[in-house]
Image (cartoon, rainbow, N blue to C red):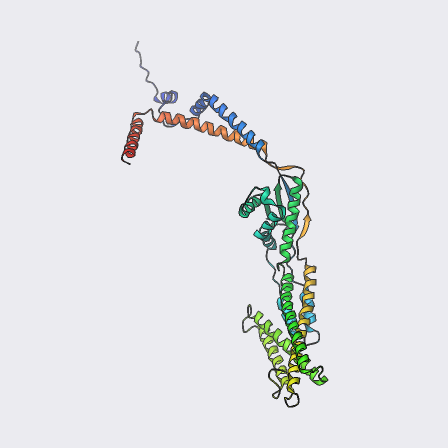
Length: 424
């Protein structure tokens, strides 16, 4: 009987071979064996991390979150422009100033006004006002305003809705009632800031006329004082009706010329020289100047803008006429600006220059942070992966240095390190 020798299958040997401890690659089964073998270390590490996370979570301060929802004012074209146009066209002589009002009342709307209000809400002025009003530096235990501002910014969130356009303010504090007070106070401080700024188109126009009106008021006061001194010095208390009419007409024309010049300068910022509106405004200015020159006349005093012969008027009378002319001119400018200022104020109120509160802040009935359960669970899971990674890394390290060549490299590194320290 012939015996046949059975040759072993090399593929079977490779599949059933026990992995060598110095193999560089570790299979999933090997990693599971390592983890089970070091289960005590892993369990202790995870339990210690979970207990530490629970202690830290219990020590974290409780914070409540109060929310405010705001509706920013619309950025539509001002309907007061129509009123100003009607006012400017009335009487004929008010036209140039009406054109100036139309220029000041042009549409200055923004594509996304909510973003602008978010920037105002998060401005340093509003934040510092909140810190000073509620004494937050002492509450945050900060000695510097900059540090208190950073802590305040960590507790405040201001977001503009992309779909509804509403602004949502969230503010956190340890006391629910104080959180609501801070959130509502935040809106109040913003309103104080917005009252001093020209945010909307109507507010810009109101601020423009307010500044011009103040300047005109000062000029009128100066003219009145000069007129009073002239009356006392010259003794002239009255002039005839013809001279009065000429002076009043000249004062109105001078006011119109000044208004038209300001309008043209404003139009030059956005219009070219070929712009029809600019050409028309120049023609109107030339016509007004021509009327003023005709009223002054060649024989008149160039400084008085009235057609009165020097031979017919004494020196004291001419000085009185000059002062009276200046007084009527400043009175006319002041009256025109005062009317347009009142219209701008009405337009600003109609537009709604300040934001509207959709939802005021109320004391929250649930805490916003910390989420203790989530903290403990997250730390526990993280600790398990850290412990498992450490066990696998330590096993791979031990296996790597079981090879003679790796041990030699390690000894060489130690020798080089020691030699470097001696020579260094």
